[in-house]
Image (cartoon, rainbow, N blue to C red; front, top):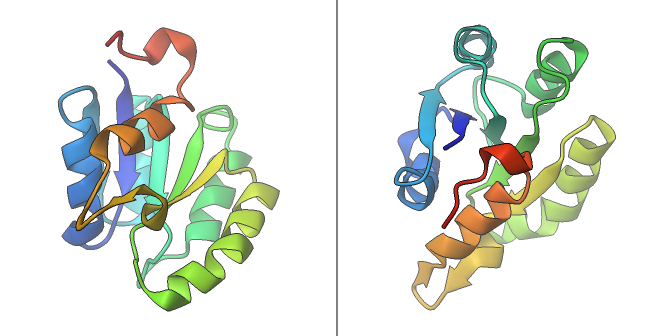
Length: 140
């Protein structure tokens, strides 16, 4: 079981992540980059996920702070886009490229996991778990 730190300011993006991961991993939700860094020190996460649409913080500043701190620089970092808007779809490639340039391990847009009116929760979990170090992946 891995410990996953998730930065999200609003509860809606976390619902899909919570549904996908809560039965398999310990989830720690934070609402600001500052709180995320403080919790990273306290909880020693195995993975960090940040939603990309933050109103009060900057995803790239948070990612830069994580990557510039030797305590966290090897922790896998996933940028997660929960927006289903056309604008988000258009910007996916640019945000993914910027995140990769700053050291993100993955960019996961929720749009890729649509399944009819809902989402493929297992596929989301598998995509996220693929970035965990092998010793932290739950045997299913």
